[in-house]
Length: 171
Image (tube, rainbow, N blue to C red):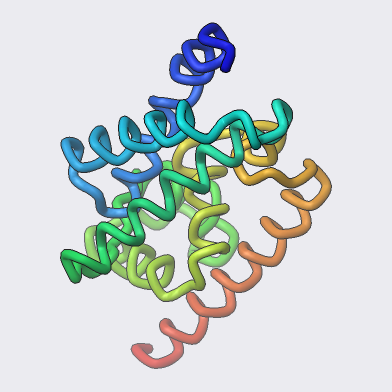
């Protein structure tokens, strides 16, 4: 095991993975614990992982640990997003121009986002809330940039579809 590889990986990925877990509803202390546990697992099992796949493997380990943590605690996932950033980049396409972002709309956005399947929700959070590049998302998820673009396109469309459905019900 290359000690420098682990240290560099820790420096690059700790903040991104922790922030992602927090955005998914994990407390700060639990996110830190999960990421630390993931790195311990990386130290134990990294010999069997290709160097190019280490980043995405570590991300998957942390996300799976979070899922298992939620199953044990029976915590309902809620997404914490930076509503202004998310709203400006996604919701802008289908709301009245110049409309002020209100608390009600923020809650509707969060509700719509939470209603999406996990893969779409993750992509939208990584791209629009955490502002990661296609390349960074691809490295985290272990897929190429073109696939990230395709999946994000589908996620945006599904978000828009669900948003429209929820707005038709209420108005």
